[in-house]
Length: 476
Image 1 (cartoon, rainbow, N blue to C red):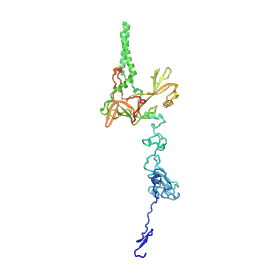
Image 2 (image 1 turned 60 degrees about the horizontal axis):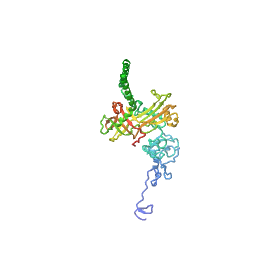
Image 3 (image 1 turned 180 degrees about the vertical axis):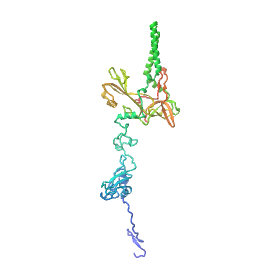
Image 4 (image 1 turned 60 degrees about the vertical axis):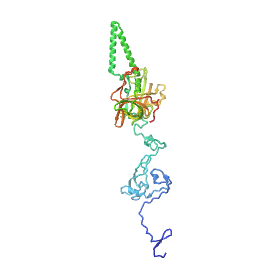
């Protein structure tokens, strides 16, 4: 075109005025292939799918940066553990050593984690020449469900299976389901568990004051001596007859209290009025009835393996015949004797029926507790049916108890979460915490003249619960 104004032709064929622009030198940049539209499919999203350990479509995902450098090339970063290019590796890596073909690169970067939460060791490019690579990833990812596909409550690390669905290895004695010896040792060594013995049970002979008992015995001895002397001297049996009648009456009362004393005390606890925790004063002796909730240390029954209990009791009795072995040093013939007893109690919470308040019952850490918990007969064993209960034989073997030709009876009682119990103790308020603690002195039930029951003393916190195997529990 003959014109005094300069012009040039564009690539599309148009002519425009002006001189064409001189091409500028481009700065070297990293090139990467743009990902096409995925349509919401994460498998086609390239690096995003790799971050979540999802296999991607190999035909649409390319790794940027040089990946085909020779292994023997001097100074090549053959051990770069990255999929984002050589520039990223050089900027973040630290090269140690100057020997060609021997480069140690340690890199910290975010990236995918495996199912156990551990960083994946992935690398791009050749790894020849003795390259050592160590990569640490940051940022935890949500763990996947177990391979069973079940959705459970709580963290994934709280069940018997790990995050990959394999059985979890027990890390403590309480989590071991296969070793009862470790479980029993953990109960013995746990300070939060109170271990009760047979002495903590009610016994009329133990609760009756010893000075009064010896005074009564001394009076009767003197009465028998005096009655016998008068009968021999003046032939008058009146005093001896009176002493015998009084002795028979006292012996009857003692026998009655020994046989029916426990039932009378449970009746006294049932008839004692319930208090309302909302209006109870600090230091007041109260009785509270409500639903039990486990504390920090739940228990498990010894034989039936009932979980989430606050009180467990398992007792083994043996019957002694004429030529049978004694279960204990005080075991008399033709009676049942206690051979072994396992009884534990821990701190728990009780929700009051009257006010709805929740109180912490301090029965753990060696506290004084008097339990009145009904026990049910679980197993009756004699020489004829010994092989019909392999669980009982296993239970005896775990405790190194012999199972020869003996007549045995196993009883078990427990208070599990959701059971209804009655607690007697002293109210203690500590800021916003409401607790029931053992009283400083024993509590007397008083005389029950209508039932011919003498006074009995109750020490510590009193627990009363009926047989939970026959009563439905309240879910909590």
